Amino acid sequence: MQPLVDRYGRVATDLRVSLTDRCNLRCSYCMPAEGLDWMPTAEQLTDDEVVRLIGVAIQRLGVREVRFTGGEPLVRRGLVDIVRRTRELDPEVELSITSNGIGLARTAGALAEAGLNRVNVSLDTVRPDTFGEITRRDRLDDVVAGLAAAEAAGLGPIKVNAVLLRGINDDQAPELLRWCLERDYQLRFIEQMPLDAQHGWSREGMVTADEIFAHLEQEFALTPASEPRGSAPAELFLVDGGPATVGVIASVTRPFCGDCDRVRLTADGQVRNCLFAREESDLRSALRAGASDADLAGRWLTAMAGKAAGHGIDDPTFLQPDRPMSAIGG
Ligand code: SAM
Ligand code: SF4
View (cartoon, rainbow, N blue to C red):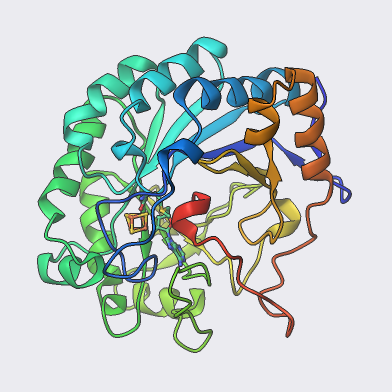
């Protein structure tokens, strides 16, 4: 076993696996209304190939947590089978998905039975009109039903991810928190990052962590939670003295790159050592050319060693990666 260590001594143990770049929503901070040129199926890893690479990560490189994402992972037909086979590789590894929740009402039970531990569901508003404005689809009821089904299937603690957009849902932060508290879901706000396909992000336009606190503190008292944050991206705050918490993932204004323990595998088999990396390492070609597991592990270690110290969003030379978030895996 050789850990995925980089030149700054950080060790990646948390693997994010994108299973598809496709999605059934069109969140305005993620992709344009017309969608994107989806990845051709032949370029996408097959179920067998994904499971093999996850096996290399778990069995040779010390990965202890696998999160399936996308695009929308629930639109990947083989998802339940991929989860089951990943669980068979290791009974202890933590398995989760990040999903928009559409279709979860139908599959939560099968996912839990296959060995999934938890879900993160993205939900930016509980108002149908705002949901339609942000996602360009009328599917709020499906997401709410998906969350309830995940809870019933034992896929908790349920985490809800929300992005606030100025003038659209930023004034709804307390309402969303109240809704989540009532259901015992753990809400985390994520600062909007320059990863949208249409390159529409601007520093002035994004809602900062400080603004998120200001909105929440109009209705709630927030105090820092005492538990250490470790490599978790979310800073946790007790709500009205606790025990309930709310998280803020301030990737832009309070970067946590020094504690990062993540590595990413795209749906077409490229290793990315950072969301913002401008280089990738092509494991799919190596795998299809007959590389052994040891060879694949060696390539993965090399890809990881070159991880940058930080994302550099504030550098004048910062360039947004060519791949949007939906094709990297958030
Ligand atoms: N479709 C799934 C979902 O929405 O949860 C998984 C993929 S999505 C790319 C993963 C997470 O990234 C979601 O919580 C979404 O809100 C977030 N996200 C997408 N674009 C973002 C951006 N530009 N800045 C910050 N978060 C973003
Ligand atoms: Fe789809 Fe997730 Fe992007 Fe929204 S954030 S468009 S649900 S991939």
